[in-house]
Image (cartoon, rainbow over all chains, first blue to last red; front, side):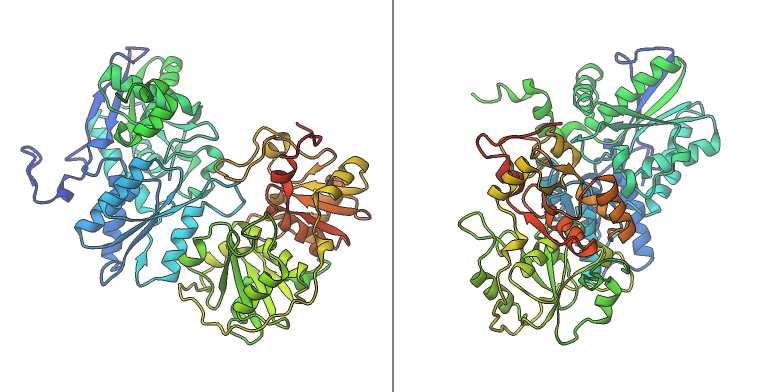
Length: 321
Length: 282
C-alpha cells in the first residue's frame, strides 16, 4: 500500500482513515459569507461510493474478529442502499453472501446497484402508518431472517451497532481535525442511523468542546433515502442529543434543488442529502458569519437520477428523440 | 391482562412459548407484509395471506363460509381447537383474521398480545422458516355471525340518526381529509374526509410502546371518557379497508366489553367512493 502513488494490494487498503482521508473541497461560488470558510468532505470518493464505507468496514471487521462470518454464514441487513452496497461489495470480495432488506421507496438505481454489488434483494413495503414501538418493516424482516436462520445469517444492524459510531471516532473525526489543522468550528451532517454524527461529534468535541455540530433533517413526508426526520429517530439508537447543538429542518424539495446547484455551480456531483446539508450550512453561515465549517457529503448524484427527475421536471423533459 | 372484560381472548408471548406444540393449540400468522411469514415464523404456525386467502377473489367481500371451512380445515384446525392468531403491524390483519374466525363461529380464538414484533425481539423466543406439516381435517363452521359486520346502509343510517357510535380509527390526516390514504397504498377512494358524526380515535391510541394493549383503565379513559364513546349504544368501527378497525373492534368488544360492536370492513374505500354520500372534512 502506498498512498503517495495510490497503488494498493486490494480495494480494502483504499478505505479512508487519517493517513488516507477523503478529500475536502472548499465551497466558493455558493458560499454566502466568504469570511466563513466552508468545505465539503466528499465521501463518494471512498472505494464503494459513500460515507457508509466507514461503518460497513468496521462492522464487518468486528464480525470477522468475533467469528460470526464464514462456513456458509453471511449477512442480512436492512438498508436504504448505501450501507447495503458497501457491505455487499465488501462481503462478496471476502467470500460471504449478503441479503439486503430494502424499503420499496428506495430509488431503482440503488436497488439495481445492490444486486450488481452481489446482494440478494428483499423489497418490503415500509410506507405504512407509523406504529409505536414497531420500528421499520425492513428492520423487522431482517431481524426475522437472522433469528429464523442463524446459521445462514448474521445481522450487523447498523441502527444499534456501536461500530457504526466507533468507525467515525476512528476515521472521520481525526481526518477532519487534521485536514483543518484543528481550526474547524462547525460540523454539518444529516441524520440517518446517526453513526456519523455521534462518532464525528464525539471526536471533535473531545478535541474542542466549542465545535458546533449541526444536524440537518428533511421535513416530514420526505423521500430522501437514508435520512430521517426527528419524528422517525426512534429506531436510531445511536442518536445522542448531547452531541448535537442544533437540529435544522429543511424543506426536502430543497435537497434536490441544492444538489443540482452544487453540480452546476461548484462542479461537485453531490447527491440530495448533500444538497440538504448545504442548505442547512447556508442558514447557519448567514447567522454566525465567521468560522470554518465542514459538511459531510454522504454520496454523489449518480444513484438519484430518477428522484431528481421527479423533483426537477426540466430533467425529465426532452430526453426522447 | 387482568381487568379486561374478556382476558381469555388474549395470550402473552410467554404463554405461546409455553404451549408450543401442545395438542389442540394452533397458531396462525397473518401479516400486512405477506413476506414476513416466509422470513421467519413461530415454530408450528401456519400462515394465511390476507390478500389471496381471506378475501373473495372475485367480488369485494370476505371469504364465504365454504371457503373459510376449506382454508381452516386445510390448515389442520378443528372447531374444538384453541386458535392463536398473531401478525405484524400490531396485529392489524391478525385481528381481521380473528374477526373472520368469530364471524364463522369458531369458539376459542385468541390474539397474541404484542404480535409478531414482540416475539421477534424477545431473546427466549425462536423463529423458523420450516412450514409445518399439517393433516387437513373436515372443518364445519358453527354458524355465521354477520351481526359482527356493518354494511353500508346501516352505516349511512347511523351517520344520519346518531343512534350508534361511529369510530374512525385512521390517522388524523386521513380523518381530516388531508390525505385519502397513507402513502403508497394501492386501495384508495375518490374523496378524502370522514363519515359525518364519526369520532376520530386512531387505532394506535390503544397500544403501549411495546405494541401490547394498554390497560383496561387506560382504554376506558381514552374511549369512554376522552373520546365520548357511549357504551350503552351500539358501535361501528371503520378505517380504510377494515384491518385497523378490526384491531379497534377487538379492543371495544373484548377488552372493554361493549356489547354490540361491529367492524365496517367496507370502510373508507367504500364510503369515500359512494356517489352523493355526505362527507365531513377537517
